[in-house]
Amino acid sequence: MILAFSSVDGHLVPASAGSFEAAIWLDVHNPDEHERAIVEAMMPSRVPAREEVEQIEPSTRCFIDDAGIHLRSLYMERIPEGPTRRMTSVACIIGEDRLVTVRYGANAEIHHLQQQAADRQIAITSTTDLAILLFEEKVETHADLVEAMHCEVAALRTEIHESDKKDWDEVLRRLGGLDDENGKMRLCMLDTSLGLAFLLRHLAGQVQQQTSLHGIQQDVDALTSHVAYQSEDIQFLMDSTRGFIGVRQNQINKGFSIAAVMFLPPTLIAGIYGMNFRFMPGLDSPLGYPLAIAAMVAAGLGPLWFFRRRGWL
Image 1 (spheres, rainbow, N blue to C red):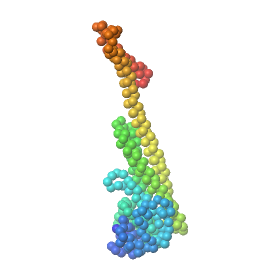
Image 2 (image 1 turned 30 degrees about the vertical axis):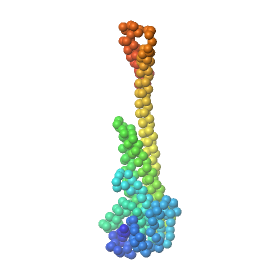
Image 3 (image 1 turned 180 degrees about the vertical axis):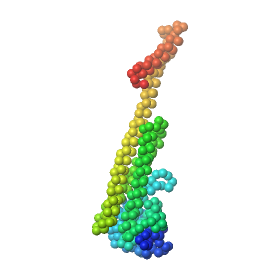
Image 4 (image 1 turned 90 degrees about the vertical axis):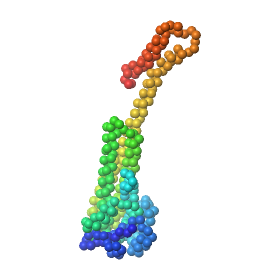
């Protein structure tokens, strides 16, 4: 699918169907061979395949050719069938007269910009302005995602340290998911910083654009620091959870150990008087049975009293 947008009176607006030549922005989403041919006929470069868009080598994510500046940018997107998020990659080709975005998955940031363009809310003067706007939208959206993850971590911290009833398996599963998402977010921020630095190096002399990019870079640096702190916080909560699980297991093992010590002396007494010898002390006495029971009870309560006196219970 190809969506085209033109600049009319300094505002980005959707172009009429099929009028791609005058478009300042072409959004190419999961293109087929026919759509690839249409886009490639309008620029001296071919449309990158999915594998090329998703490559992680820096040399393949930021480079320049006859078509313009090529940037590959990582995004965090929510999976429709669940609460988790995954990474997607968007290829951005910034030419002098046209910007082309190539993607093979959903992208909330691009969709939001397209909605704004439909309402004539985006003012641009060049393809560089549009690329900067894409970065601004990405950083703003990812800042909201970082804030949402921060709230999830804070809720888990309260649940771990204050709640009496906990499902430790569920807590560990949620912490593992947050750690995975936080790692992906950190990679997205590092990738964004790489793209911004590359764009800054090739916009020498464009003071206004460089000022905007420096502001975005500062936001990215702040988000990167927050994500790094959040990673340490999640790791601390994981260690705390494992510590609480270990304490709980030790309490259970202590209960079994005390029970074993309590029942060992009565078992010894019962075992002695259960031996089949003809002559045993008290075997013929009427008080033999109650005395044996009393001895077993005393032998069981004695260790319990001793443990309580030492503060082990």
